[in-house]
Image (cartoon, rainbow, N blue to C red):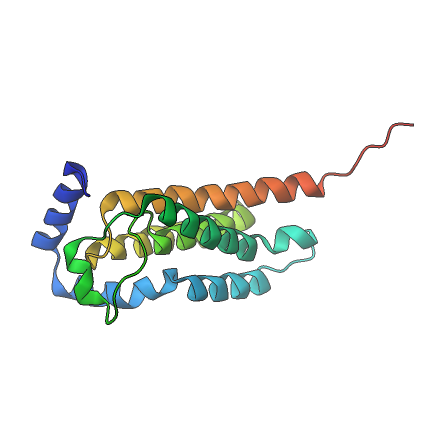
Length: 181
């Protein structure tokens, strides 16, 4: 069930979006699918592989997206929220997944934040483009009418949390062990 915030945003988007935005959204949203996000994370890991990166840290994008996929499924199962009625027109098959949180927004946020963590401040343009792409893919879910605004917001927060959590574990695991004698 949607709240008044979700319904207001949904109605505004449906009433004001131009057709070209829907067309662009149909293409751009593909980046946020689980397999696409994992493939992009793998490619990003290869591209960002540098001698200054520790071995485990190099895998941050892949690990963050993988964790986000698992966490997103668990949270979807807990909430079991229905998608907007218009979602049926975008799916050729019945939608079996819950609306909350948006899996696409979750995966792309995990990818964007992990790339940001690996590239900022050395490569500010890459870092900022990753975040902009993460926001854009999340917004496509609204423009296509397949998620409520709170689904996308929750997905962004969950994905960012997954990336930050994985980064924290990697940092913790990478610290040298001090042995007292």
